[in-house]
Amino acid sequence: MLAVGEETGATDTVLIKVADFYEEEVTTAIDSLASIIEPVMILFLGAGVGLIAASVMGPIASLSSNVGNS
Image 1 (cartoon, rainbow, N blue to C red):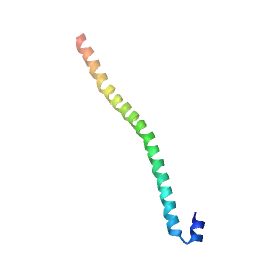
Image 2 (cartoon, one colour; image 1 turned 120 degrees about the horizontal axis):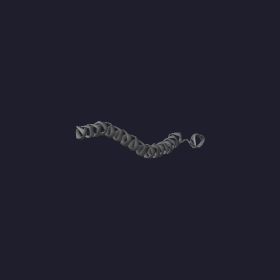
Image 3 (tube, rainbow, N blue to C red; image 1 turned 60 degrees about the horizontal axis):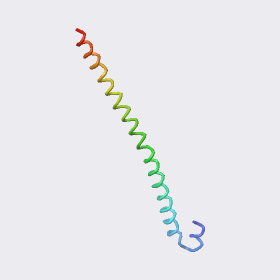
Image 4 (cartoon, rainbow, N blue to C red; image 1 turned 135 degrees about the vertical axis):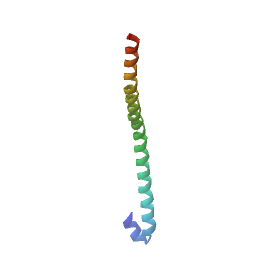
């Protein structure tokens, strides 16, 4: 495209079109990457919250069973 722009004398217009094309490509790639990363992050955060909840509830359940036996 640059060669065509040089031949026609419209190099600046051609470069702007090329920049717009690649900007669109990058935007599309980032959007698709974000759509993949979001569910993965939700799974990791859910697993982390579940781990913390299990870590808190385990000793509480142990204490309540020990209190019932006394």
